[in-house]
Image (cartoon, rainbow, N blue to C red; front, side, top):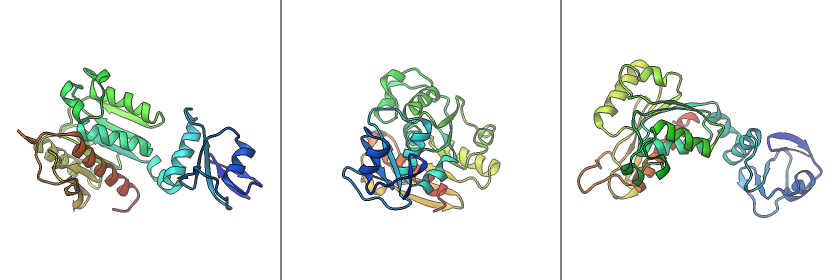
Length: 265
């Protein structure tokens, strides 16, 4: 029968997943069959998609893409691999969104932030002590290379403004707004609606404190504008920004991007 093995079509007489492994790639200890990591042997069928890997080894670019495709399904991987996503702001939301999209296999990320990593960021932002003092753009590039070295990252160490927003994010299929202040959020929305009409914008609002996780939701407000959060919980005295709700909202935003790229929204 004919199956796809690590991204390449092969002919095999093997009747099961492990027979295929023993025939063509003995010693491999990770087996993914049609998007499902298999701990036990499974029968093979014509047209199955198989990835065989080895724990602890960095695969080649081709093998990593095959693995991503196997886990996400070829249709999903094909859609995200060719996409470009912008992220304005690399704080709690933006740094975590960037990591999620890199794991997803988005082809190119365009990120922008003018700030540096400082100690108060560490309670919720996707940085480490070793990044203190680094530009957030540089730290993000370093982290994303560790997550997925084959994702292209275009970093802009500048403050996003009405004058440069459309230039920075021109060519993006979707843009994520990940700023702290309502003024900056409105600025970006207005700048992109005017400069890049038709490009979806995913925004975050209402993620402070430790309220009910289920109050954080994703809503399509108008046209291509999406809002993630509870819409109410602002940071202030007694209601800080903490990693659980920040990461939940970042996950909502990354998932909204995926749904847009897949044509669901």
